[in-house]
Image 1: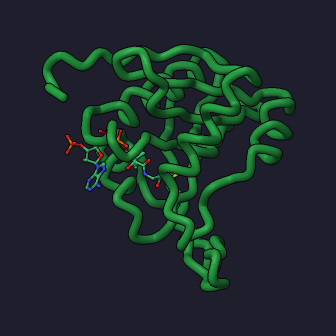
Image 2 (image 1 turned 45 degrees about the horizontal axis):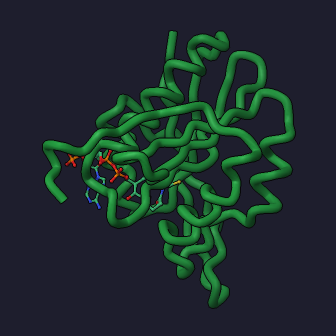
Length: 158
Ligand SMILES: CC(C)(COP(=O)(O)OP(=O)(O)OC[C@H]1O[C@@H](n2cnc3c(N)ncnc32)[C@H](O)[C@@H]1OP(=O)(O)O)[C@@H](O)C(=O)NCCC(=O)NCCS
């Protein structure tokens, strides 16, 4: 696939997208770390007030998504994933900037996220202006029962 010709498009997602979101999630998250959600968890979350989904497609095929929740003037990035074969083309960066734009439009002044310690996604978050604000010991539980720490990041949007 030639990188220069790829077309990435973003759209607001809904419950109709959850089958594809779940496929991307299962392909994207390494089961060793216990970061992926079940489709039931996604469905339940999407039904809550203030939750929104952004889906990214690459050349017409769904390739990534981001899920976020705003409560008052704070928001949290809940999930961000790009299919392995579509990575390093800027999809997650575009999704993250779309989440930031929508959060701002909703009056959010601070955006939070949690990421497994050692996840390469940290480079993306730092590049997009997030700073580490805390650590949560044993936050993720892998398939084999091992625990992994999470680091909390935040970005002011004001
Ligand atoms: C993290 C993830 C979402 C990045 O998706 P992506 O579409 O490849 O990200 P982008 O192409 O927008 O990358 C933006 C920047 O992030 C950094 N980055 C992303 N993946 C990286 C990796 N594997 N190693 C080092 N840096 C990486 C780089 O700085 C990259 O910019 P560059 O390609 O110009 O160097 C993707 O690897 C993924 O789905 N991982 C599994 C799920 C996950 O861990 N999600 C985040 C926690 S919820």
